[in-house]
Image (cartoon, rainbow, N blue to C red; front, side, top):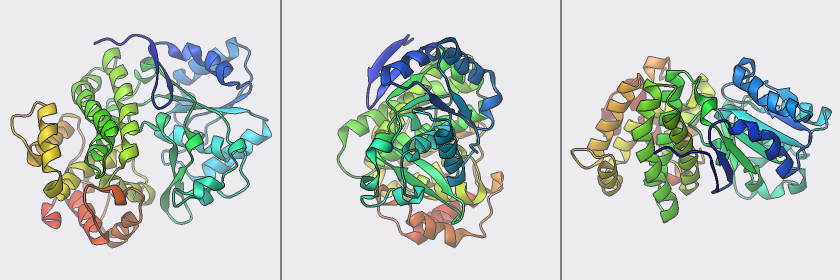
Length: 391
């Protein structure tokens, strides 16, 4: 079904459709941004899609500057330098343009632009968020160029604390962008492997949210529909990157996955966050590799949900084993490796990774309670492909 250009609100205002990037000046005007800081990453800044976005601002005589010192796993230093740039040029809002890394960094720059405390004082723990100066949080427009993290509809960012070699989640309700411009044409140039990695990342968000314990039927419903959309359209977007319908549906599914995970994530993210910090690997790729092993480890408590998911995916058999087999086949079709060792992740820090993962904010909402040893074993299984670690 072709969606066409349309707007909706949930959880934030989304302007969806081809060529909606042309509405960027209108978005700035609607939320009162007159001098935005345009934040993207070090790879995207050289591409034509950035020039296209900036041209819309120039044509509308909107002053701006560009900050692109953002790496694949954004660091506290990337954010601090961005805040310095924001203040030096007297900006009054942020345009977050790119994949999850750029959007996470941009949201955190907007959040920190008027704060006096350290970024790490606002790690998502307890009521840290409540100590922020709300008036010092700049408005944000988010423009995703990948269909994966869904950071454009999130209230948090994942930032690498380089000194402690760990990823930390920075959270505040007002980090939620005020307007999202979701333009599938901006994702046309995405290489197949990035399409695959980010697409399965969105799938992981939805599956972990669906499996998280607790009662949140709205999140579960959104998660299931996201899974259905990804199963249908990710192979199409991977095979033909110019398929605008598939690209658009994947953007929608990614935002849905991130909306759903307010219910919670789980051990896939608990481990992946640590590996991203230690090995500097792409987050979606890590999630995609770990997912089947995590479902196998949780299979004793998620069987009923896997039965339902198998029906949604129209599988021949029911249960966790059927869903896991489907996901392994999907990964193979998308040229995603089966183990972490295939992407250069060794097991020398397995014990440390288990201990770090246990402290991750995603761990408490795993489908079942897990301890550091369980998470170490999950890592070892995903690293080697040997399921005996989690049986």
